[in-house]
Figure 1: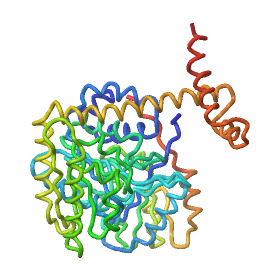
Figure 2: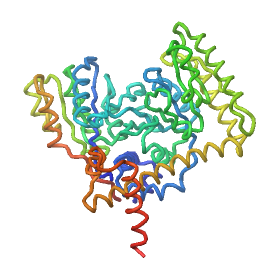
Figure 3: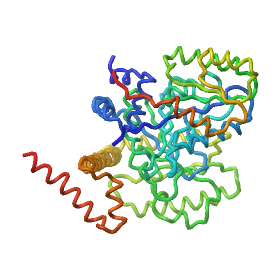
Figure 4: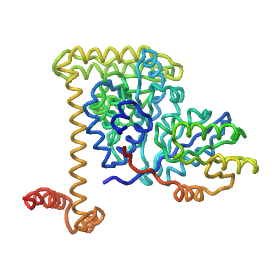
Amino acid sequence: MDIVQKILDGDIRAVARLMRDIDDEIPSAKEVLKELYPHTGKAYVIGFTGSPGVGKSTLVDRLVDKLRAEGKTVGILAIDPTSPFTGGAILGDRIRMQRHFLDPGVFIRSLATRGHFGGLTRSTHDMIDVLDAMGKDVIIVETVGVGQDEIEIAHTAHTTVLVTVPGMGDEVQAIKAGIMEIGDIFVVNKSDREGSRKTVRELRNLVELGLRRHKTEGPPWEPPIIQTVASKNKGIDELYEAIIKHQKYLFDNKATKLEQVLYDRAKLHFIGILRDQLFNTVIERARERGEDLDLLVSKIVHRDVDPYSLANELVERELVNSKSKEK
Amino acid sequence: MGSDRKLRVLIAKPGLDGHDRGARVIARAFRDAGFEVIYTGCHQTPEQIVSTALQEDVDLIGLSILSGAHMYSFPRIMELLKENNAEDITVIGGGIFPTEDIPKLKEIGIKEIFEPGTLLEDIIEWVKTNVKPRGAQTS
């Protein structure tokens, strides 16, 4: 049986290995992805983002209970950071999700950022497609613990849940642009802690300001603010209801809202693929002529050339000129 | 560019003891050696460990155990790997083992046992020598 059929049949080992090949940029994985693509586009994607330690993994774990009770199968992509010095990573999000390890309706994959910025991995969109093709109804993406500007998830998920906790910095943090603008749903987790009501109030002010600022087509969505204590399973029903409500909102406003989500995701995915392919092609051809990346960089370090001219020269020579040579 | 395979390792603690210092130390050492380490914490059943290893496509499972229950959990893990056609995953153990158990564990397919006092660099060296990331998937 070929790999594509195995993936469509939900073969765990085939899926796991394909994900590995994608992450390691093995060329044959692209061929499989090409064939899987027509089988994608069915799953609903939920993103969880927020600072490290706010309880994203525990919330995901609880939400999976709800989804499973509704009979939905679930794929989870849990992202943790790669060490910039050694290239290694400790992927520990599974610790909070142990209860689902033996459920055949749940597939969990831990991913390392491998130098990618933006909260996701370079491979996340491909991984979503694989889980989608294997038949998972809902795919949950848990971003790396993020700061203020890692907003790729908003262009990836149907519904983005932004998680915070009481007492995270002063109010000014909440006014800053970037991550606070991307939540479709806000969760104040650990809300049995002091300062919870103040945090909710601040978020509400922020949301109301945001509503006035974003004048887009179609009816507006007012992001709800949900208080949870994930470790005690409190507020999870409310969170689930909010996600369902947002899903309904997207599907009720297909032309203006749902299509926009799908467009944003396809664009981010495509630009990533194109950028990688152009970069790899240019670097590979330079290397064939005996100039590897290290050599190119050292030219810049020694001020033999500026980075702008060098980049321009490489693109001109490797892409533009090579085309006329081939003719 | 790619074709730069990254070694993926599962560090798991089967059974009931909650002393995970050793497991954490080895997880960090493996990270610093450039491996991707999936760490699942304490109290793992053999079934949970094997399910994780399959979904995460690891090359190596490192089992840390101090409770003395290794003669139950280790054979069960090997059995489950076999059932899932995953005998290609290397399994090693670390912790406290009676000397007479070590040959028995090796007999069931545990590739190496690391006892207290083993240097971290020796373990890493062993892994780099004996565990190679797998090739690409072909039909």
